[in-house]
Length: 229
Ligand code: ADP
Ligand code: ADP
Image (tube, rainbow, N blue to C red; front, side, top):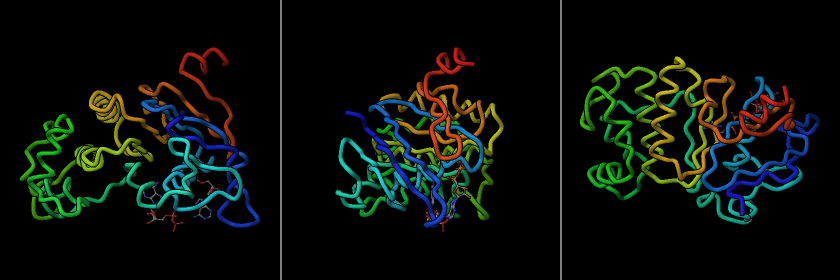
């Protein structure tokens, strides 16, 4: 059973303009899928439907075979860890930033969980540790370091599905490759969906979905896509 299924999804933001025209695809558990395509193709719309900011006009979005309209919004959102392009960090410590959103857990507990969840490769590469203050009153993190903290904050919740929405697009491609390689090393078993417009982002993906004007233009491995050209 696929982890994520889009089944003939039709959707638009305004009633007179359809954005997704009957989109179908599946992501197997543990699969690493990249969704690419030109700006405006509908990539982020897929993310918003999966996170249930909106419901499809027609068709279904399923997680583990269940229509996400039939389960609570909380459980849908618990299943999906989103990392957006420009993560906002609090003007506080790295540890606090990673712990944020863990109701009832102390920062120590979250940091311990972080160590257990093997997110350390992300934090170890930072100039200093969990107690480092970031933002105005502390260390200025680079864009790449900020995204490492943001990814760690998401991974520590151990979501079965990781949704990267242009999460590394603003970084130089070397930093991007570095972060994605770390991510796939610590998280090989986790299902990941990376939305990107740049080819360097898709190096680690096992399946590439090429979106064009709200439809799937092509899908396959790197080798499949190259063969077709
Ligand atoms: P991509 O991520 O591939 O760049 P999007 O999914 O963001 O594309 O957008 C697909 C289309 O939907 C675009 O034409 C965009 O202008 C339109 N769109 C996106 N968000 C909204 C919105 N909130 N309201 C109306 N139209 C939107
Ligand atoms: P809007 O059309 O007003 O931008 P959206 O439905 O796109 O509304 O988004 C609702 C909220 O969810 C906004 O606060 C937006 O920042 C956030 N959001 C939307 N898409 C994403 C995404 N892919 N990743 C993270 N946050 C998102």
